[in-house]
Structures are given as C-alpha cells and as structure tokens.
Amino acid sequence: AQSVAQPEDQVNVAEGNPLTVKCTYSVSGNPYLFWYVQYPNRGLQFLLKYITGDNLVKGSYGFEAEFNKSQTSFHLKKPSALVSDSALYFCAVRDQAGTALIFGKGTTLSVSS
Amino acid sequence: GAVVSQHPSWVICKSGTSVKIECRSLDFQATTMFWYRQFPKQSLMLMATSNEGSKATYEQGVEKDKFLINHASLTLSTLTVTSAHPEDSSFYICSAPPPGRGRTEAFFGQGTRLTVV
Image 1 (tube, each protein chain N blue to C red):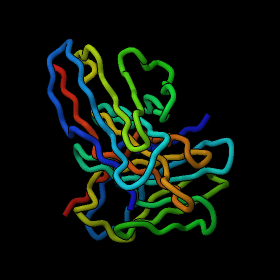
Image 2: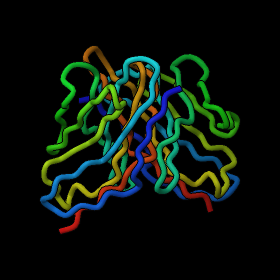
Image 3: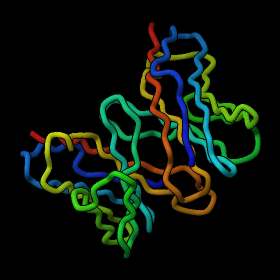
C-alpha cells in the first residue's frame, strides 16, 4: 500500500532563511511525487512534481524538492523564505498515472518577519 | 491550463437535508474524478473515485448511500451528501487526473466548505 509521511506538523522559519519541509514515501513501484500548497479554505495549488529524471526538481514560487530514492524522501526546500509562503503544504504520491493521490497529513509552514 | 471548478464554495444546511456539490472540468474531459474530504488541520482523505458511465468506487469506510456520486458527463461529477448531520461538516475537494499526454499533475477544485447545523 502507498503511504506518505510528513513528520512535522509545523515548521517555523524566519523570513529570508532557508526552509525545508520533510516528506518520506512508500510505494510499490516507481513513485510519482508531488507537492501542493493550500491556503485557508482554498483548494490545492500544484507546486512541483517528480516523475523521472533529475533528482532535483524546481517548481513554482522558488520552491524545489530533492528526490532521494535510497532514503525514500522528497523534501521540499526554498533558499529564502517569504512571509507569503506561510500556508499548509502537502506531499503526495501515486504509483501510476491516473490513479488517486495519497496525501501526507500536511505541514503548516509559518514564516515570521 | 486545465481547470477544475467546484460549486458551491461554501454551504450551510440544516440537519437532515441533502446537499449537492458539483465538480466540473472546464477545458478538458475527465472520465474519472476523485472526491476527497478534509477535516480541520488534517490531510485529504480519498472518499471515492467517480467514473463516467459507471458506478463510483468508494474507499473503505465511506457510506455509499450517504455520499451519492454521479458522473453524468465527461465534464461533470456531483457529490450529494444525503440526510446531512453535523458530523458531515467538512471541507470537500474534487480532483481530476492529468488531462492528457505529458501532464502528470492532478487538478483540484476550489473546495466546498459544508457546515451542517
């Protein structure tokens, strides 16, 4: 069975500092990995994905993520956090195209000015 | 890009009534749509997979008689919460899988905040 773990309920970082939001996954085949962001009472916005190719994936709003197969991780990173990055972040996985995504529990990112 | 529109964005209903939530793919056809439920500060839990022209597939523990899903066309799926109770209050989000070759990310509706009083 597929699963996603986001070990941190909340991540706090000061504006301008680098941020990391952790994600590990479990999937039987080759993983399709995604990061989404959610603002209060809104749907999910796609940030980035890893399907194949380079392990470092760059996405929207300056975010990037590194796929690490040996550690089964897909941590979200940004070199310099903005207050506007404060939101709820979800890591998600599926094992093939067209199937439903399985989400982690989410991590609240709080960026202070 | 591909757009999924969900309506209404919020609804308040009385206990015992039914509520219908619509999910439309605006610029692509979706033979499959997914319905998720999200409790406050929790993750999205897959409720069911909606299939155009056939019955929906429900996840374990989801009452199919309570959460009626109809995929009437290639651009519309509806979720009806029947005989709603306060415990059904939640945020419901629909999603359509990638609409074509080369696209791998799913697209999500804006979500519907249901409050049952």
